[in-house]
Image (cartoon, rainbow, N blue to C red; front, side):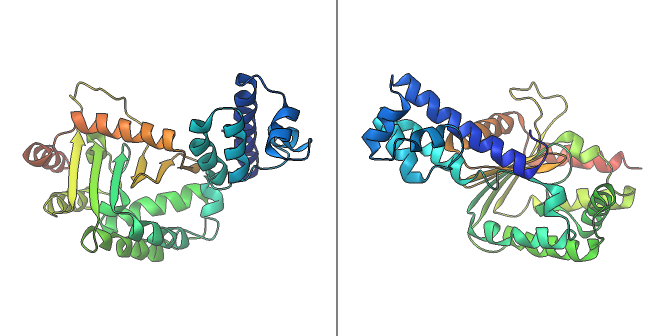
Length: 282
């Protein structure tokens, strides 16, 4: 990854330009021939190929059509649209504190019908108790040295969790067993959080699976990611949020989620792992 949002956006634009160039070369055309066929100024194809001018959706469709590569257009259009927001540093998102970031997710959560969430490091935000969320967000605030509005951010996170019980939403949530054992806060905080997971499992809209330590894996542990319908995936890195909208990349995350689902345990078996983690606290 590049080191700043602006350089990451430029890298994304250059990647799109390179894909356009490769499509043209595979078609055996030169840049001028593409421009003429599209009815553009002769220099436009060169500007697009060198990431000088960002392509419009129509530009991409015309380019792919002329080069006999219409099937490439949807991915390229999605990548082009998301270039500005595909890689955004947490430092930028959290520069005024954490509350506004928590609140910013509300429209996405309201319009999403199918949530698929995988967490390998902490309890998913939608399933957190106030005490657990406070412990986690306090550590994030301290590490990133952002303004301390943890109390307000926790309130916003709890308010956001209403989607678990309201509206037409479905949640398929997977956590690694390690999440049950990593201590965020003291033993009482963790006991409350793990007990909350047991109660959440009874909600009709929620499927909670745990990938056991002992599972024979078909998918290695991954970074935390969420799928919102089939429209967007968000991947959480230490330094940034990566927003994925290209259909082929979303499909890879969906396939990874499916494989992780196959080795997870549910119902009574998941409850056993959670209760064992509670017992290990004392």
